[in-house]
Image (cartoon, rainbow, N blue to C red):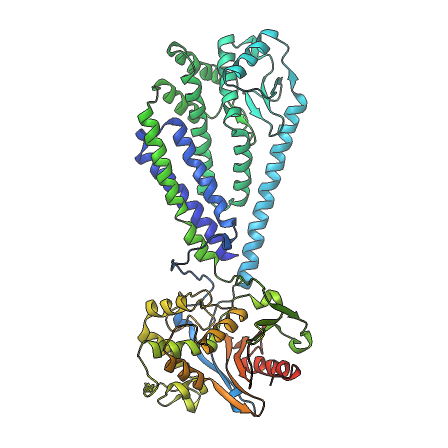
Length: 587
């Protein structure tokens, strides 16, 4: 939720600032309508954060954000060692310090919802005010005025019925009504307004109707409810309403003779003298407004000149360029919203299983792929596509990347120990790829990644389609309960590609990795794989076991992920996996 609020705030704020700057820089190159239409780009931008991220596809972009991660310096060497009788099940995990944002997210969501609820109440109140005005509206009985209204409609090519009335609850002409539209004036308006002034008012209000400004009012109210926390949005909508009135004034002036322009401006001044300020009704377009707004409008009326085709063309070009800038925020939105989302699995050749008894006490998933039958067997469809941190299972690919980059080789993969003391004796010595994989020596693979550098690692991850390929968590931390995330189905697909060398890497490097993850051999098959445990603030919250079983005539690939507030370890994931494989007669 915190990330989502940040996305909404950034997108809305950047767009508002961009439009305001564009209006100031290109003020003389924009038509009156063009200045108003620029604000429609804001309405588009406000929608963008609510478009599902799967609609955005930027395969060549590398923009990574992770607001839920801790700093790299926040890791500590609180180590958990889990040893079973079977040695390969031992799982060493570094506990990383991460701020628990669950409480923050809940509080943020409550504040946001409370704010939206409050503004929704105000919007409903505004709707009731409009409804009350409708009830008190009486039809205009003056035949001459009715004829003039119809003539104005005909002049603007409007054929749909519009109710013309007067109400004691208004002291400024207004237009409202989404499905049944009204043009309402103060009672007895014909007693102190001339016919020419009434004619100008009708043209102004009908231009609002023609421009669909009534519908825009509803959109603005909805966005003000959602973005109530951003004052820039409120400022923008206030400016948008002023620009709309100026554009409407300009449209009226363009349809009048030049000698009528002054009279049109005087009509506004007449209202200021005769009527008190009208209370703002968000769902209606009002002829009158604040003194500051009326002053701006009158200045524009006084300086009115007919717009040329050249000016209109410039205005269109500026709108298009600014539209491109607004659209350029889409990759940012996609990357920021892409923190933890589901892998898009088509579900072909998939059989869904009920394995609840194996996952008692854990929220998890199991994926099994039969290479010969080309069929998936999946427990927990939703969790099987959820991307989570890979932790030590990533070490398989860190080793492969190191081999492919010639940082290490099959014959010489030794990295010297730098003397840092770790709680495990097996870590406090030089390592090669086999010993480092066997003992899950985290510093070995962190050193490989540092030597590879982030750009090269990201290229590798993208090449093999490794989860979200997000390295924003830092070169030595991104795979430890941080930014890099992958789903169980993707783990299985990657292992399959690794085993069959569909990745296109050197065969000897693939073979070296296979040998490094070999766990044990039995009469009925060979088991290879890697465990992984995500330990945050001393609690084991994320357990993995991925691998494959080679049999005489077939190979089965698997990935098990379990999650809990504690005791969700790679060892437990391995125990669950072995019980399922035994039950299925695979291993």
